[in-house]
Amino acid sequence: MNRAYWDAIGENYDGEIFSVREHDTDGLIERHIRALADPEATAADLGCGVGNFTPLLAEHFGRVHACDLSPRLLDQARAACDGFDNIVFRQTDLAREPHPFEPVDFVLCVNVLIMASLDVRMSALRAVTAQVRHGGHLLLVVPSTESMLYTQFRRIDWCLRDGLDCTAAIRDSLPARGSVRALHQGIRSLEGVPTKHHLKEELEVLLAGHQMEVLEVDKITYPWSTEFHNPPDWMGDPLPWDWLVLARRR
Image 1 (cartoon, rainbow, N blue to C red):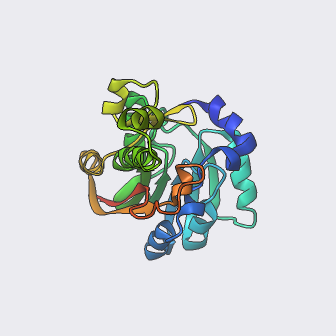
Image 2 (cartoon, helix red, strand yellow; image 1 turned 135 degrees about the vertical axis):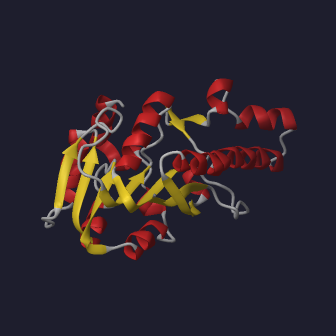
Image 3 (cartoon, rainbow, N blue to C red; image 1 turned 180 degrees about the vertical axis):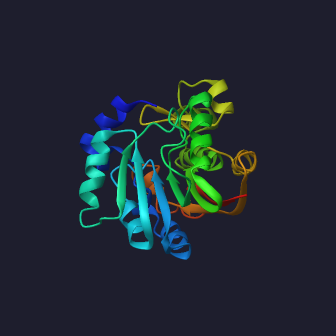
């Protein structure tokens, strides 16, 4: 993983990085955290960033490990968690340090498994699942491949409704450059960064292969303004989404 990139992002994190918590208007993540809360249990926020979810975990669990690759982001997370004395902050690269602490009862992992490199991503997946104790729970959020393709369809549909012919609609909607190999892996560039998106069934198979029993798969939906600048009023449901997966380690 690229520590320098995330340190640079830390200078303007809110302006650069999509906030899942801010846009999770149905509160699905918070609902799951509250449902599994246990003041005697230990939780981990893997890839905590600036600490958007870390205070919520600290409110509902006895001890929290907050981990991130970037020291600069961890400094911001510490500031966001001022007043909590049950959080341990750790600078770690999950792709290289698979066991930074003992397995915990609950792991939250939001938009961490998004690296374009399969090797790096699989190393991180092994680390994430290994941090869940047997019988413990993982709450995982990742970008959706299905939503990515659906969003492209809505963009083409928008162009057609505006009077463009099919050739022009495709030309104006789809990236001019891109690798077929990357697309077949669910990799799309977001803000210039190649980003892995996941299929629902892909997640189920991957987690099952790492001793995880998938209990629930849900959509965290977002407004169209997160995908398009000034989307038309007629563009409504279905909305774009990320996948949210709740799994238990066997």
